[in-house]
Image 1 (tube, rainbow, N blue to C red):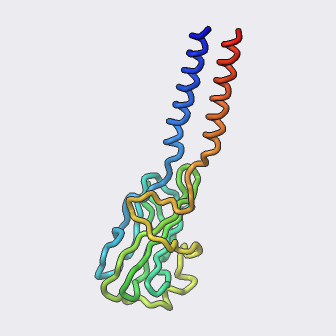
Image 2: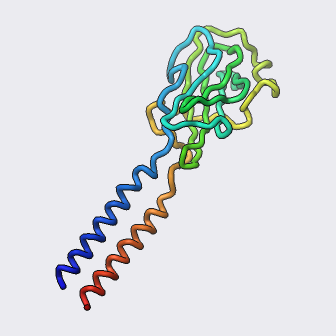
Image 3: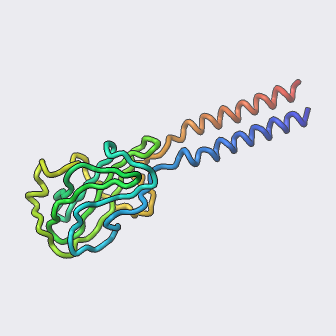
Length: 190
């Protein structure tokens, strides 16, 4: 009888470990791997496009990119394009010298939105003007606000608390352990 109880307890512990170890993959979410221009780069001339590369394949319909200048004007234009894990958008001629922020909102494979931003510095004023950048017909995907907190390119980009919900794993672990305890008690009595 004692061997049965020990065996049931060992099976319960092993099942619980398997459940918890399997949760790591399910809790993984989209991570920004690189950007073009690189986060923190200094440029003498503005780019014609900006690109962000993620660790998962992206879909353009679920992605928003913004390029906001030091004058708070938006400089992105056109639609977001996606090629594998890389998303990009066109950029109008930039205006004043200063810090430009590329804000993003993407949806990870697990369905959770991930937001963040990277920035570059324009060292020489560009030919663009604030009036052209602010034009409603020239904003492309400007409907979503640019995130205001920069995120390092190598850091996980989940500022909205995204990721898979934890509660299903907790409920599963409680059910599994509870079932093991009930089975051990029944085997111990019989």
